[in-house]
Length: 242
Ligand code: ZN
Image (cartoon, rainbow, N blue to C red):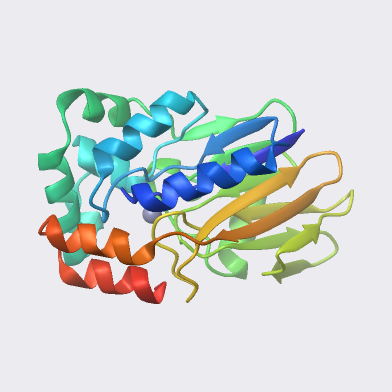
């Protein structure tokens, strides 16, 4: 099976449209999956929800989804994120919030992977996998060969066999006997210094992870943030990819 994963759209319709077009142009994905955080930060949360609902693909909850739906306390977030969530909550219609509220925290694919926005330990606490220790803790709870995550907006993989290896290679093959945490980065607000949207293909037979970066109109997405009255730093960070 060839899977296409995308995560952390954050109300950025321009980036989402470009990523879905890239999946379509690739034409080889058997299944498309969304790793959460559809809303928050960006100016078009309703439009992003509509597009993803139309796709009818597996979607899991991100922290911003639950917060915007009123299912999570805002004290988890920094001031800038809180401001964006409050704006998003005001912008969404009741049916959007219902959809976000009902998203599952974990998607367990029958074949080879489990998908969670943050960590497996306690998915509703939305912890981060940022370093080797975080990764080892997740591997302890992982019953499959692969765990697909988002949340940090930083595409990378942790591969665990004889030892633990961190990788940012755009193409990575995971040997039989090894397991991997695949962070699929962010569509709508990358934070690795590359403003292009992030998309990951995964071939479960070849055990091959391919990370692609997709050019989209970042200036337009930033302009929409300003026009919507969202905090200006949210526009600036899109342009810088941070
Ligand atoms: Zn996010």
